[in-house]
Length: 416
Image 1 (tube, rainbow, N blue to C red):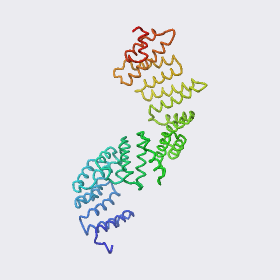
Image 2 (cartoon, rainbow, N blue to C red):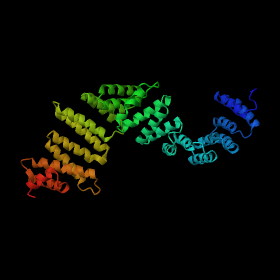
Image 3 (cartoon, one colour):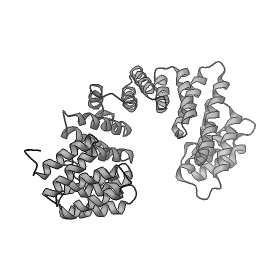
Image 4 (cartoon, one colour):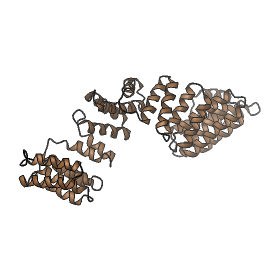
């Protein structure tokens, strides 16, 4: 105070120290003292606004921030504080405020600041503003938010690229490990496993504590290299950190399947499907496949076969738009286990579902063609019915796919 009592910058710095120490009266005292020395010193108004922002919904604070913007128009702090008050309730005011800042201070990274402001309230808008920045020049916090926004908006290639830029720019610094985390997530999701080894090593040697998702993704890398036991250890560590991270059940099932433990593979697959309302069709197919593989070597084949068919029934119920796909898989399984009646029942079900569909998709045409082929062959091979009994199905097959090997044989057998 003796040395800098006439210096508004030093007075506000002291006021901010008191603000940090929650001695708000003294913070205001030094802000007012600074304004007596320079009534246009914007940071003094910002400090008064910061104190008021703790008391109300931002109205009084906004007034002080406006004072800073008006009297010290080249000071970015008033603009950014004012905009932050409105980021949840009035995005247009936020954008207009930052546009004014950019006009008065062209060098200020306004787009990056807008990306930061919207990051917690509107991720897509945040991403759009970050896209207007240069990832090679914005600061590490902005770049990290940019990479995360790209990742969670399912722009994984961009997230990987941004994370790699961060790794290079901040090599040897704490942020390098954070960028390595999202580079790993993105690379694994993109199935770019050739890029994951150094990223896994960075996380394993990290000074920060690994989180549940880290172990999950490190496990996925290990599994992709056939290191299933290491993968299982990682998934278990992930579950220890977060019992609700049920993605681990899915990958534990795959890992146990990899080491040939079908019982545990089934156990975790069933847990996953029972727990995750967002389970993908491929997860149902995976469980059904485990049951069918187990049935091939089981004494009681029917028990595991029926469980597999039950999984496909659940798939059809959960995803009605691909019910025909599920029923076709049941039909094919019936062929593998020589269940002729079942094959015909399920094949005809697919045919009935799709034959008169006006807006049939290309993949559904494929299901329909395959159903005609399977049912036609099954009847053709029946000594009592033979090729004439199969004629309606074979003729439809020939119509849909005349070059199919079965179609070629059927033409000759039917005298066509």
